[in-house]
Amino acid sequence: MLLEGKSIVVTGGNSGIGKAIVLAMAAEGASVVVDYVAHEDATTQLIAQVEAAGGEAVGVEADISKADDLHRMMRTAVDSFGRLDVLVNNAGIETRQSLLDTTEEDYEKVMAVNMKSAFFASQAAAKRFIEQGDGGLVINISSVHEDWPMPGNIAYCVSKGGMRMLTRTAGVELGPHGIRMVNVAPGAVDTPINAATTSNTEKLGELKDAIPLRRLAESSDIADVVVFLASGRASYMTSTTVVVDGGIMQGSVGL
Image (cartoon, rainbow, N blue to C red; front, side):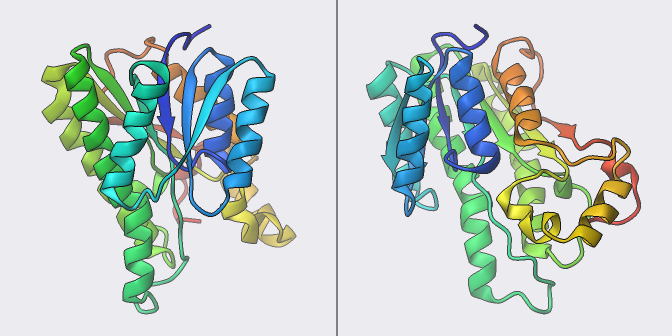
């Protein structure tokens, strides 16, 4: 198994892409820590699913917008599984509002979940990696919108652009410690966050027409790339983004 013996933390791991990542990693032998705030039942069900398949997972009540809670997640991985090998910063939200319509509250909420959590989780994980002395890996689940404008969803784009620079800069800073940081940038994925589009036949058709592969990604498509990056078979990759978008970025308008 590609990830046998690895201890991994996944933020926002109880739904959507995060859930697929947890299941894929556990299936490859990893032990996984998953957070929850309001939906403990979803995490409990996910852990039961992992354990039924012969894997290991633990849940942690944590507000990922708070640095102390993120540090506690890393400690939980060490306490539960003996060490920390990989952090996956997956948690993300969006408001789908323009610059003119975004309130301060909306902006701060998006940045706290998408950007602040990735920053301080990476810091917490890096400190653990340095303490252990044998390197580590941070995988950020970004978006094509780290680089590709999406009018009407500006706070989300800003947060993903920040994640891109976090990855590039922290990857350079942490490289001498043997710590790597890589973004995975999905395009359109069939998850609850895109329900407004996938439930609208006309919008869904327009979106598929804009994708050269003529389909949305499944969460498993993204999870498979994450497993590859965590497996050690991409050990010379850092400070960069892997785009998984079916070719949609070759279009002219952000969707």
